[in-house]
Image (cartoon, rainbow, N blue to C red):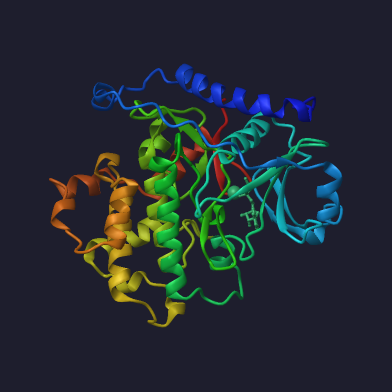
Length: 384
Ligand SMILES: Nc1ncnc2c1ncn2[C@@H]1O[C@H](COP(=O)(O)OP(=O)(O)O)[C@@H](O)[C@H]1O
Ligand SMILES: [Mg+2]
């Protein structure tokens, strides 16, 4: 990667796109064909619109970030540092730089995955890529999200509680963004790392899905994809993904359900004492004791109808059985429209799902053997 030159970036993009599909084909030994879709012969997706991003010079981003000044650093994730910058025309940007310490080839691959994916998506609820710079390391340049991430707004000490109206807006906007990734954009994209620190907020508190380092393109005729290593974040991982590496839209739907519970309750998916949000919320959802799920800091100031919609949606999204989880189109229907028909979402035997469900304790056991935790909250298998 270090030898990449600017002139080859365009080629890199088309190569990356091809190689995603090839990679998927090679990896996908266990994938079943979705015969229904194959039979009706769905048309090939529309070619992506021309990318709107551009190349930035290294000097330009150095100048904008005041020489990557530590005062400008707004975020540090698993493999990157993010700096706030101001361009000459006054535009405020975020520069995501692959950590110098990161010599791991896989991290470079994640970085390029993000570049290749986000360069082709356009939606108000998906982070907009402005460009990249490949001199002196890898850099992605985004519009700056002035309110930072939902995680920082929700969990930072001394931060004022987020009003219910904004929480609801975040929930709906994130669902729309995810629906676009799954259904609306030229390629079917599974994000794989939906969580509060990857949902950024614009000046109007419009949520934007960001951080596409783990994203996967899935050919439309495939039902799912088997992935090794398993990567993602504790507390948000769907059981079938965590245990068998199976990835499809429902992996994101599960994480979205956890995210909903997080914004309703203001609790972290896994808190300092390793208490799982899912384990705490599940009995309350089951008993219909939804008012106890709401963040105490709101002091009862919330819309009950919206709360019912969000909690019902969350209860469907976190179902252990992926088949019984809704698609993002159905999620939007439940969240936004008319009557909630609980009957039509009833499973043949609710008890089965209960038994099948595993808690964080089980997850910890699994983690003691083949999995390793990183200093951040993400995990990956040590084996590959
Ligand atoms: N466009 C942006 N505007 C403002 N802050 C951002 C932006 N992009 C990232 N950040 C901050 O940096 C953090 C890490 O960025 P992210 O893209 O998630 O990196 P990583 O892949 O290392 O997790 C985010 O949680 C957020 O706080
Ligand atoms: Mg992140």
